[in-house]
Image (cartoon, rainbow, N blue to C red; front, side):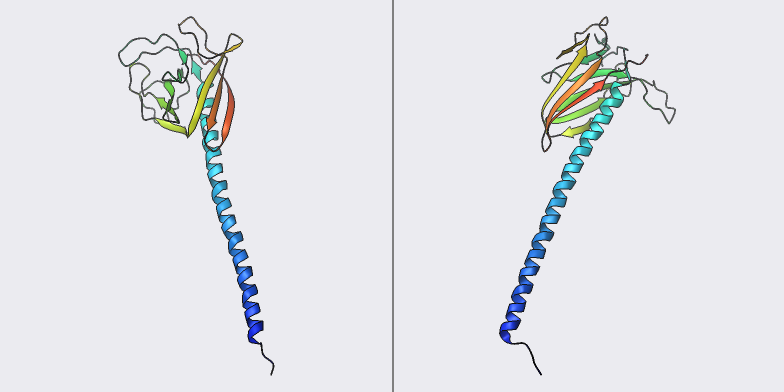
Length: 194
């Protein structure tokens, strides 16, 4: 009978150890890569949801002015300011679904704010004088954010106030987001009747 020598067994074990180490390295790389891809996909999904929400709001804008919590009439129907002012956007939108037939209007007051690197959306349960609900975080990790408005054929930074001024034709959002980089999005503003 012929068997294996000790040297042959050691060589075989060494080769097996090399193959096992290579397999573990490949598996670890695949798992790490999967985590990175999942994180990136989650981040892109967050941006897609934000775009869908902004688009849904801006295609339902109405020229109805509202009153603040103290009862004073707001000067403009659509407010857009720079990032040093809060809120960044403020307007009334139509088309607020009411599947439960609750006693409320089909119009909704909406604000967008930048709070500690988070783009947030707040909506009021009542148009005039009502408190805003809980903030919905749309995107976290916002390093920079800028809204621009197409108004009377020109891109401007801040909309002029007053009831006589028309709503913007479009809104451009430029953001710098952690893990993604610079993003620019353009939204048409469709004015709905109040």
